[in-house]
Length: 401
Image (cartoon, rainbow, N blue to C red):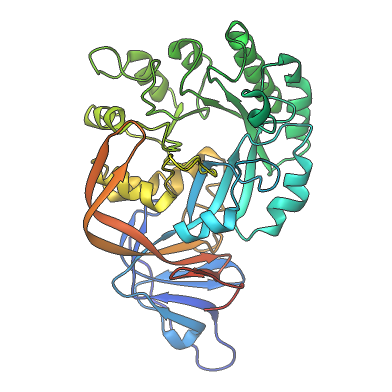
């Protein structure tokens, strides 16, 4: 791809607010993996070129030798901080990982989402959006009752769909946890059907937790269509994507072939490296890489997005593919590919700059498997709306460098 170089200004005010100079831009959305300078103005990407004069920007940062990507997108986390016992502070877990957009995976339902929308999310620098839980109060009662839909009277497809339609651009679809303790097992098929009904009425996607399901996985995949999300796709529980011969089940391949999104949602307990390796070796790659980040019990290992990009690269995904699964692909899934997921001029000024550490690195899962790798992406800078918000271990006031 040939991009015209930028001419230096002859005088007056600087042309750009911020310039990242000398880095290797890996932007699968544009098909770029080469040295590029990236300039930002008024919160947007203003120019991408092989050379941009540093005097053209108010602030120019030398990122020579570093990897520049679009801001990462974590399509499944829990960010209703203060509204859930185990929800995270998005800025503390996202920005240090190069994540500029976090999607809450059903922390709240139609009856308790407003504080998330009006107070919690607007107070964070990270762009935060959400899938609405099919249950009226989402996951709020899990610590007390052990499963959010033990009383299925909480399920109201009409109220759920109406709430989503009333919040365009903020609520992105419906989430249901098809987990063995979430609901009485004899109600599982009905709840899944009601979640499907709500998503269809809202005209948006359905995200389904598929780890530890009380019903057969093919029954779940059967109701999912293009753009719907099967999250925790590499879990190692009884009803997982592999058959008894460790081959990818035909129903899984069929679902992937018709456009069902295969989402990682790692969470430590929902991604078995042995299952993931088997799938990768058989050509089934994740559509999207996500964390299911939450405040975990002490014995659980929950990785951030930059670590999961590194881990899946260590398991055999080309780095460009792992970055695509954390940038342009989730942007497309969310219907936001015109705004985020790439650093094309005119897009949101969200970027990440990584040091590419070489050595021996080991990632673990809760099934007792290790993944060894020789490359880890460590976040050097995070740019949100054209401003540095994280640098070398420190969250920064907006605009500080």
